[in-house]
Image (cartoon, rainbow, N blue to C red; front, side):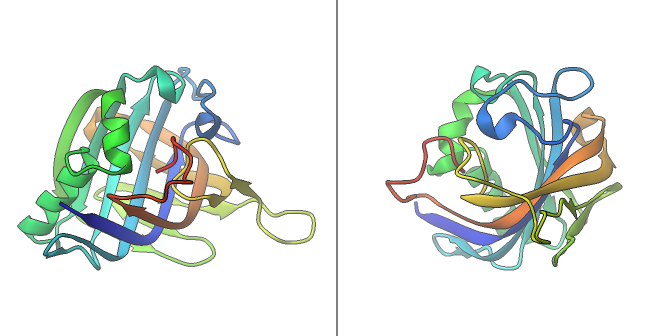
Length: 204
């Protein structure tokens, strides 16, 4: 089965600035772990005949060590306005059942926390923000010396080839993974069951 999706995401976690997970370094959260929440708006997408355009979803994570050490805890939240077919399609994709980049990461899951439904809202722009049930986050960019935004490019692990980094205040308790956000990032993304051959192995 073939799938694709593109849109914009915003994420935050409890690592100190700047989160080291994209370069496979040990997390810098208060307990030596990375606890985070990422929210994705799907501008365009589908899994075969199931249209995913306009859906919004989030995932909560706990990375107990550097990413390639595995033993991740990982669960997803799909917006309550999505149809059952859309929610099931997103769960299959993110759980790695439909191939593509998320399938590459499935062996690193130590505990799949499942899928929930809740109100997931995303506000785009220069300073995107999101809410997932009672959880909330916002992105505050780090400005460069010439006034542009600070970015990370060509990281080993990333949702996009280049993403803006900054502060990510907010809090979440999804799946019992309590944290207060410190670091944030955002970018446009594009995922598919068949990614370009020149994409770095760790990139999703």
